[in-house]
Image (cartoon, rainbow, N blue to C red; front, side, top):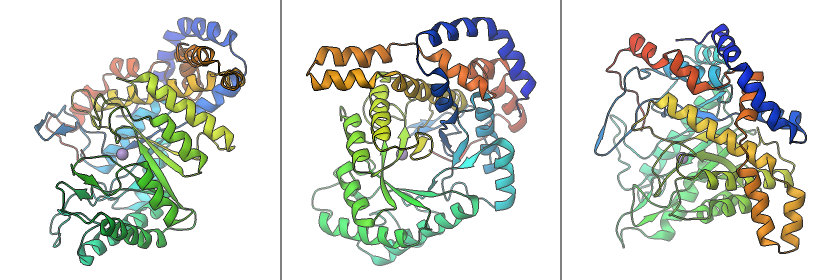
Length: 424
Ligand SMILES: [Mn+2]
């Protein structure tokens, strides 16, 4: 299914009076509205190829119908999202779930939807069909050099796919770790992992980055070999200038101060990418902003402050991606909500009065500092985000138009009710 431009224009026309009233009211109280709008237009969030189908848990999976059956249909889905919100102009491929068969055709299709290829993702957390050696006891950490080599070769193959498509980064998330005390020699596991990563690092093209993603627990429950930001940073520092830490919001123990982690990684020039989701407990994979929107804002507040301190480009100097699984909602509606929550948090963080905040901090004026942050957080910036999206060619309210156009019903008609997409 394609969303024709005239349908977006018609929809925006029907919303215009209400939108203009809200936008003008908001814009009146803001300085540098045009600069903020341009930042919002430029900001793009990548959609992972595994997030377009209904996810599940180990207890079951309830397919919603009309799920994409191929890489081409996954790209079509991301193209739909991007047509509606103009804020999700990139796709992140997972190998081997989504191996492009014809690079030229894949690139042409992406160009047609206005999509770029974001980081490519490797998978050494499950065995593939006909795989002789197993990742059951880890991949890059494995005691057997043969298994480690398998993981290294796979990552190098993923880089090759990415090069063909124009990606410029590799994300490595390792499920490696142990579930029982005594199972693993921590030092040897670290060393093996580091040596394996060094071989992958050596295969990176000059303009590439590698993101080392960490996770506190699961699938292993006693130790994780890249378990937290400290361990990830240790690997990244030992690997070299092309290696960075990747922060996934769901990969921390409950109540971790993620905004502080982000601030310090930026200070060290070692924050590479970001995976958005939300959670009540840990890696719940819920819609971004659905549970803790204030935390999302506080993280963005540090991101913007830290990137500005280093003169970084908000849109291009970090990798921005959603990493979530959609068990109950229509995955496309969930993704539209996630992207919108990210755009809102980003817009609010651009509203923070930095001069006043620095002054309050210098004066130990704790109450004032809170007022400044919450002033921004409690500003309803939705008309500002909508204005940016409309100016970029999107809809004033993407999810409303998605429903109005009956996108899911159309996809079910095209693809069938019993389709199952590869992914989480
Ligand atoms: Mn992730």
